[in-house]
Length: 504
Image (cartoon, rainbow, N blue to C red; front, side):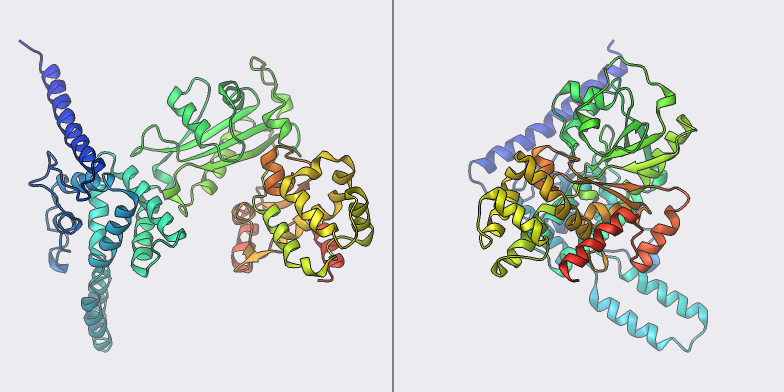
């Protein structure tokens, strides 16, 4: 007699084989030129031949207000069918499907208008009546597709599917493929749901070590967006002695790190990235607790594009600080060593903007003469030569240019971080992130990232955002409410020099 567990396993294998065969057949037909998606899911009652049919089938009508808590949920097969259908589409077809979903299965605007009018008419009635009408109006503002999103989140792989679906929405909006109000509303609804599903209480903090599963280590390497991992020895060192790597995970996405933070344990606050990612201690060295007074956050990477805007990085840093304080009670300094993406592009744009002027007050007369002398150009051509040097990174090969450009580039970078704003907040996204968290713009570091990437992004400059734990709440409030940036004398001094030279 065959044991029951083996029978169950065989049944499961057959079911998976059938589903995979159906999908593979559909994809082969598609590759041969059949533009209509036509497949029969083992869960579905019939073949799907169009977007209209799949949406009509899986997006059920919004229950009436009276039956909203009594209506039975739709069959799980609806969610699975929609997921299979969506995954089988090409990029352009996905865009069309999402556009149709957002437009035809959103809010009943006519019903909302009628309830809004009714609410206005009941203002003279008793409070209970007003509250009930307000509740009805609130319920009527629920898009029909929100039910589908909720139901998808409850099936296996559903949350990951929705995270990826939102990534598609964000790409549509950013690329202007479709940034209609309906698409933006769908994106907002999904973001709100994801913020609930990925709330702090549902996240798990994991320390990644060399003993972690190979799949996790590989993903950590692949997702590293700030300082690319070169090989397995590199990642082994980044999770080894005097280093820490932490990640948030979620029960609905097992084995999938959501946001990753790399930390260096040092005696003092690092002023360059080479000492962290290149000049390593030996792999088998033992940590000396007496040498660890500082935690330097040198890389934080969000791994899921679909979770953009869901506040995970801020929470991760706070959790890691508590973990490190528990492990090293004497630790007294917490700081980032952050890249400055966009500075070089901003600087080139600034130079291009004033190109017709021939010379600029962004550099002193003495600095312009030195650049002209080193590049062997006339005063009228020096600006073009400087722009070319920045574009190619060739200036880093000349010790004289590195010395001459340190002053002006540091002044310009300080202004870029402190003075350039978007809606009153720091233009640079990394600066905005740390300032929102309550950090202090503490120190700019010259020659801090000499890699080709560092030179191309920020002329090799990096910045420390320091977390004075007793001040983070007040700093965050001052920045968020008053758009006030807390900075040290070094940064403010460089900003002042920039203003003086630029006549601002």
